Image (cartoon, rainbow, N blue to C red; front, top):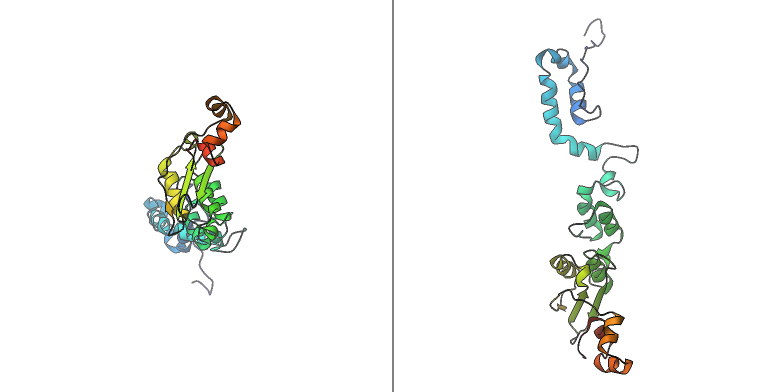
Length: 220
């Protein structure tokens, strides 16, 4: 203090590479009385502030008010939420994000709120399709031979990771239902059916329901 005036300190310019709005920069600026000669001592104080700032920067990014919204809202806004926090955000609507989805797919998955439909055929089919390629063809047969049995089939050519597909089914299957052994299978085309059975009557005799025809299964 001098003559009732606040003394000003000549703080050296911060070296390039330190973000002006970062926690470290704010901390360093608040320590202006100690930073006047920092450049003489190889920026020791700046290095200390930067080390401390690294520990708090992530939380600082979350709580800091931004033009797009107030502090903390970034974590609850599906469009602004960082990719690494999407799984945390999804829990509020009962969504478990499958592994391997892109950023855009994760946001779409949360938006579809599959957690609200868990246990329904639509939820199981959607979970399976997220692991498939191509046309993402899925056949789901409820009460397959028993009121509590469930059968799911996918195309071999469209199932790059059968284990991931089986896990996706299990993640949406309601408790109490029994999932039969899941294995991808190749379906028939009209050409292969015509080759095997020359007449429609022969086709009807061999396959009693359309799903059996598609998957080349024996009559039930």
